[in-house]
Length: 85
Image 1 (cartoon, helix red, strand yellow):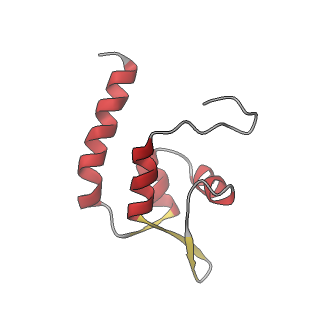
Image 2: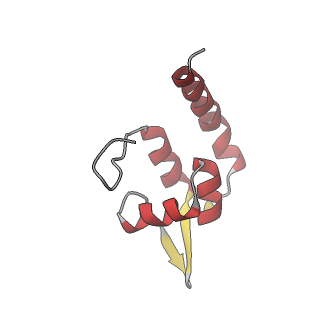
């Protein structure tokens, strides 16, 4: 399989498995691990409005269903220079 097909198959497998394994409320570290990005990327996505989060005290948390919804959209997000990643 090509790299794109491998990634698509992996994404489908994660989608099927994720709702059962993820808690209802996620930390930034859990979101980063699930999305395979750094915590800084998660915080940047919150700052730009790409990832909705909420605070409990001074801690940032995320609703599992919102993270999964964004994950399933499979949209391309431009980086800061305007080029596609």
